[in-house]
Amino acid sequence: KVKDRSLGTLTDRQADVIKLYFCIGVEHPLSLEDIGDRFGLTRERVRQIKDKAINKPGQPAEVNCLKTIWEHNLMLLTVLFVQLAVE
Image (cartoon, rainbow, N blue to C red; front, side, top):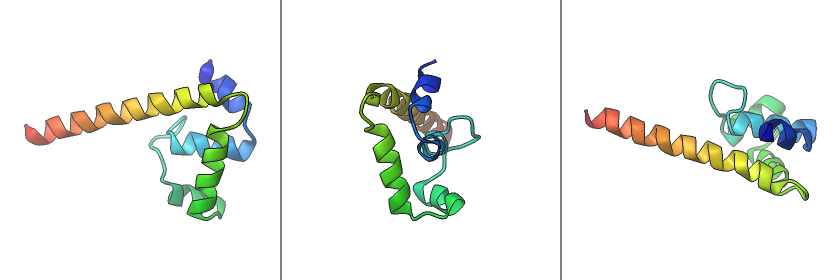
């Protein structure tokens, strides 16, 4: 619910960038450069779009919630890979 409500407040391009960057509805997250290649934008422009979406007035707490969830999942995956590498 938070995800749908958060993405609904963004422009289509902002929502696409957020979904691709934070791996929402896609198999794996894309880098800023990969997103830029997909949309014909520079890495810097994609970063600006992402940052504007995250800091958009009236909804930063919800988008930051998505960011926190993604960062937590990334941390868990990193720990898992390290454990697998040690074994």
